[in-house]
Length: 312
Length: 248
Image (cartoon, rainbow over all chains, first blue to last red; front, side):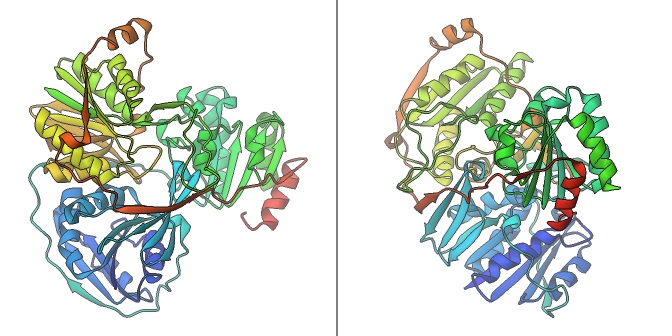
């Protein structure tokens, strides 16, 4: 069995998610190749070749591939899929965008968000925002999967391998979709989905000004990303892309700090896989305390300044 | 311009998910079911395009049991013009859903398909992309802004680390993200009106599509349960605990 892992990178560096997807792939086979696509990404391919366990790196470069147009990426990956039994794609926004296309082009199912490899044909994936886990078995000859990278450890050593890098031609771009622009968030804070620490605020904050004045400094002190409950987003205290929950982002940081969040079912679905959960709420009966490792029953107005002080 | 909006009936997002004791699935008996929240956003966006004079007709389509009629009526209440229910009690996988929707699109000839980026039951995030592939129409997923002009949709997409704007030639498939809009509340007069709008019932057999499941669900289990930890007296004790837990 041979597996093709699609690398995830930011244009300059390989993301950790690539290494984690490699871990999942190596549980299926020792014949694992990595595809790096983009433009001006030779150094990323070289970095991928050094990851231990990689057999070969395929490098495909074009201006179109740089824009991550799903149609183009899917055409490239589907063309290469003939040589592989499994295509494993990190479940990033780019991966989720093109992976179903590869599956449809090959007329196979998509195994989405694989979080455990049981055997070569059996996988565990989350449904209902992780409130249930589904074990599925496939009999399809070719498998296309996205990998929930938070469920796998980055196992490969960065300097352990010496795979060769082979260039593959980029397919001609399809005319129907064109890139217009992009707007990368310029922030010193980490991305919500990838942050090691997340500080989230809830409706108790009462206003956007208060949210910014309380949550932002604490997040900055911890080098954390900022999240919010749906109630806080609906009330306009925080932008929609801060939303953690079943209908927002599902996060699993090492430390999640919930400030003034009661803990509605839909919020818990988005953060309950965090390693350590801290809840600060003045209502001792708030459901958030039922999932919190450390609960502080206190008004955030005094608790957060105290916490800032205690952090030094 | 005609817009097709696929909608799915799912467990309401505020209902606690209970896994059946025999591990055969999630218990959906006697619980509140609603329209998938991302689909609701899709219907709202279609209705706004109609209110702007860009769209002329909105067709809502659902695949599901007889009760999915209610989901279509919700779409008609928001402002869709007519509905199609492909009635089945079978659980249809995303690839087969995409094939059925392709057949519907070929019959209806819409200029645009707007649909949720994922259903909050299966969480696959696949059907829209598969449908776009099968139709060979351009795709723009995770939309937070849609502007239609000159036969093209400019779609701003939520991607890791920011936003990307694509131009897709119509006909195209757009999938919605949360920030696109806030769906309106249904008013009583609109609910009454919706019940009078046309709703066509179809069967899977009306379409030449193979819907036999490809995946076998061996079991559905509960994730490891979290137990409540300890209460700390103050911030200093909290920080001490976090330090010894190795997360600070």
